Image 1 (cartoon, rainbow, N blue to C red):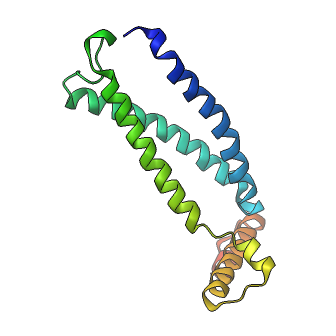
Image 2 (image 1 turned 180 degrees about the horizontal axis):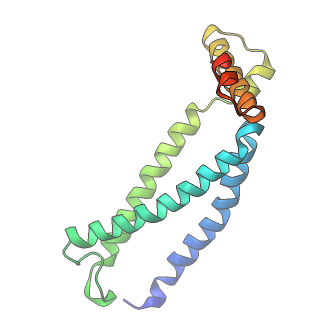
Length: 151
């Protein structure tokens, strides 16, 4: 298999990464409370690093489990298409989980502005306000006594 055959896949992967990274940053910045925006961006960066380590672990495991047949040392000796089909399967599972989570997502600030009032929603809004008050207190004070009064 010539390396030029892999170029379109890597070009599409680079394009996808270039489009996804800024949008994830914008989403994690705008949908978090202002007091914890920095923390959410740090967790986003941490997840990127964890993804790199997980990718390296997947490659090592597939290399060991397939005996080097799926991901060979030299490209023309192995069945690299099995590896790419496995990655496509993982991406499909990732997309389905993302769709499921995004379907269940509830932006509390939008629901609150609509004025929808149900007991479960009111409880969630109360928890949301308590969390904001907790982070607000943490930002202004460094003593543990003020944290205990909030809790």
